[in-house]
Image (cartoon, rainbow, N blue to C red; front, side, top):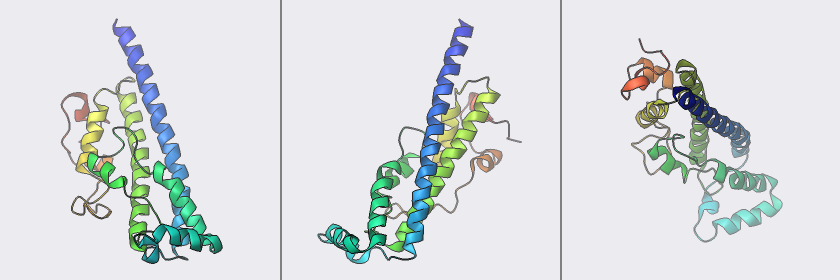
Length: 203
């Protein structure tokens, strides 16, 4: 029975890690588009008439008919929107998930806001990569068993949101955010059990 349980957990772990790797791959594709949008921001102002209620969308369409830069930025915004929103539990903290619902680059947003959103999405992509690394190491340290890993990671995310909690109405990066290794090494509070030292890095 114990062996069957171990095999079952190993299969579940493989499935979870495969899903995380797919999410990381999506993030890398998204990053290419974000970098391109950032380049276009140096050529084209955003906000202004594009954010005017009632005429903003129409302005984007009209200007985009003769301005390829505006057309490309609009295309990138439409592509990025559904990909930038976290899917599934464990991807981000609850606070970050709510912020990401509206944090999508676009012609309707001021240039500085777009820059902040690009940086936040880059941070999310890095967080996804860190999560994968964390889970892979946790799995190796616990014979393919991820029991307790989600709880440890969730506590890290809640303590270190990507967005600044003091700015809930505007996307601003959290200046106090720690990397996960730094957080665990600092003795960040952990759940009881295996998650007390998931990677064996606490001193």
